[in-house]
Image 1 (cartoon, helix red, strand yellow):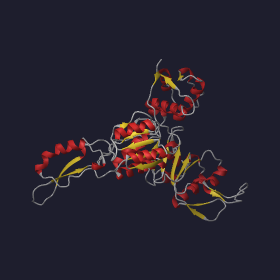
Image 2 (cartoon, rainbow, N blue to C red):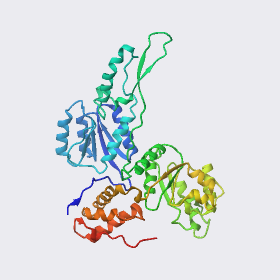
Image 3 (cartoon, rainbow, N blue to C red):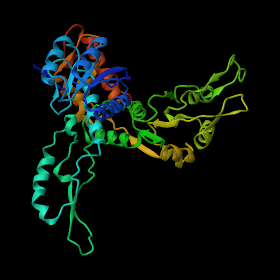
Image 4 (cartoon, helix red, strand yellow):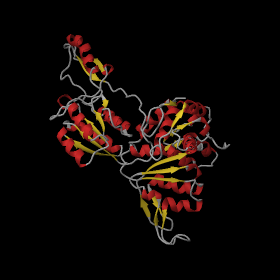
Length: 448
């Protein structure tokens, strides 16, 4: 039986440093693209010409090189051919919509393509006719529309920098000229771009794309976010994406599982304590909240927090001030709070099992992570994603169609996390065999 082939997706694990070299004579293009890449945790270097890019690469080869389709000193095709010969491990991407050059493929290429799209979307100076149009100019509108629709997807040479514009963005408006000759003007309408999946979120189902859309909308704000979803559905990945796309991404992302710490120690863990505040406190300690100052505090399983501690957390949420255990002084802390739970907090608040006032403070913006059964069509992508990630530490494995059929028939009570563990178990059972079969797929004992 032939192996089941699915696309390779980038790893969605913890974000690690990666480097990109942006080559263009257009300083605005370099700046916009660099800003987006830096927001994605890339280390970015810039070059104005092919010769400068070559020198930069010799100092330290980047993971990806994004080159404009026009260089002031070299033909970009010849440059890329020579560059590929010497730097064969670098992913080469042309910023004119033609994609990457055949050769090395960065596992984070999707982030680079996303950054290209974002850098183009932020270019508001799209096109300007320089004057108003009279009725006699109406015959020219089809040509204008044709010109705009022909604009490539990506950045053009610096002589004529434009962004992607569709014909639908053209609007002809009648101007009030108070009895004078009627005039018309062309303007561009703001049309939202299609929802795109974030690199961390594997899956193209509508529910997954909606999560990406919501993350992009709320990430730049200080709004508290509550992530609701079943266990194993990726709530912490969503929280990390919110932090990565926020203005706080250079500050700490501090996560604490409220269900994993004993109730007696949770307060000191969150708020910190002074020396001698309780038995065993031989020295003072900064709490998780204070250590996240300037960044994001992720409160996982917030529904498990004791009611007494919820009151103290509520005060911090309202005032931004905390008091360490055993201390009389208050400390001002600036954090963005993201909470997560697998429990229905709204229902718990109605029965006083969770403080309603705290719930409304935390649930200003809701994001729901779906169970795997709700987007089972993403199973092939998820399978290949996890196999690709495991292939970084052990020989690469692939699956046949019988495995996919068996996986699709499973109910997945443990969601995406269960899928990852099932595949890891199968890879161990397969030994040195490169192909996983249905025999190695073991779901273990069901948990009701």
